[in-house]
Image 1 (cartoon, rainbow, N blue to C red):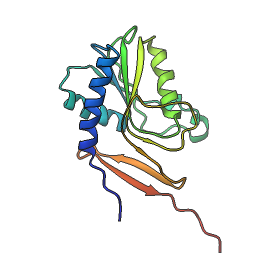
Image 2 (image 1 turned 60 degrees about the horizontal axis):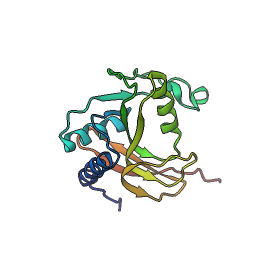
Image 3 (image 1 turned 45 degrees about the vertical axis):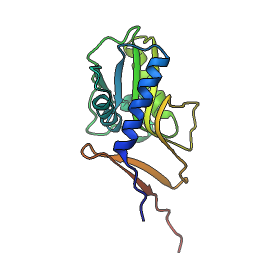
Length: 173
């Protein structure tokens, strides 16, 4: 039987934790950037929970991935939308799942192509086991230990739900 996770409860908890984090770090008037697509969904939901008027941008990191030359261009790649100046601003970077850290590395590369922020804080709905790069979320909804053949996926945007999927391994005959 698939495990159910209350995404709305996770988002409420994340919003409280994010508010406390910003207060502790004296972050006022931040910018929020969601990573396309799940990170944007989570960022929008967090903004609703926070009831703050924070500008929201969207990053599509397709061109910044370290496996771009292997996987090629997806035919529906949308450009990033950062309709604000990030120079010397505090950024809250939001993603749905932090796994290896490679998506966050690519997002940071793209952000710094737009300018030099004062700081970048990371908020993720799920931080899962299996990191390959030294990346850790400042705010997380939950931590999951999954097997190498398991993946967690956020579906949405309405309603947002987490699904655990198992990769089938081919069997020999």
